[in-house]
Length: 230
Image (cartoon, rainbow, N blue to C red; front, side, top):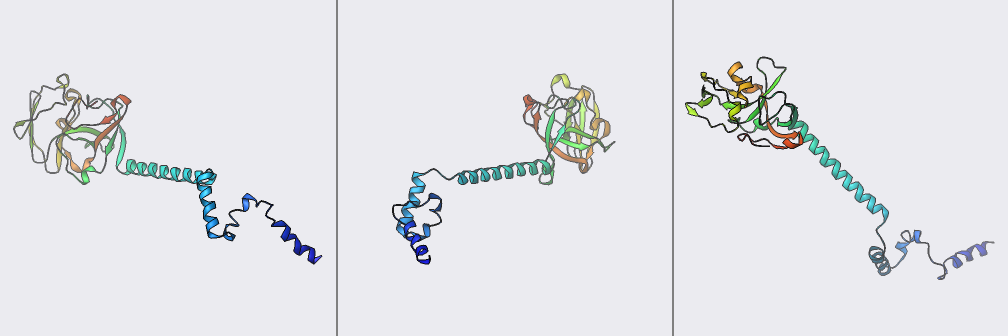
């Protein structure tokens, strides 16, 4: 019986019996280096890529997509904040119920400038937020004569205020305190702004309007000086 068992392996390795395809990778180490190289080239050029390679590519693309989405969410959450505009005091630049993004960190790296559309806590009720345009900077004087705005005695061009939105009344000269800003809405005849509640301290200003995303026909960046942005 033992001799018969020894002969069985000899018949199983007969050249006429093809080796199973599934064992080709397992037995590749038994081949000579030259033969192994030839077979690997044949697999690379003569056979389709294994299914697991496609799955790996899908995993890589999925991973990269998730990373990109995650980074975008981090940027939106920590750098930008979506807000809804209520009211028409910033028309025609912004309309009632319009959705925009504000940059919450921009003023940590650059100063507030005249013409910026800023979001701030309402000085008389800090549970509310207002959005207005910066007109006067710290230390400057602001005066309004028949609707025309003068800063430090010089007329300020305001292309963002259409004639039908002008308020032709006067406003006595005031000096903007240190670390404060004089703000007004573009829709002058229906805006509650620094003409009513005075200049806004810089610590109440927490963002600048940068981008409108809803409604779709208003989609785009928000200019600081041009009323015809959308």
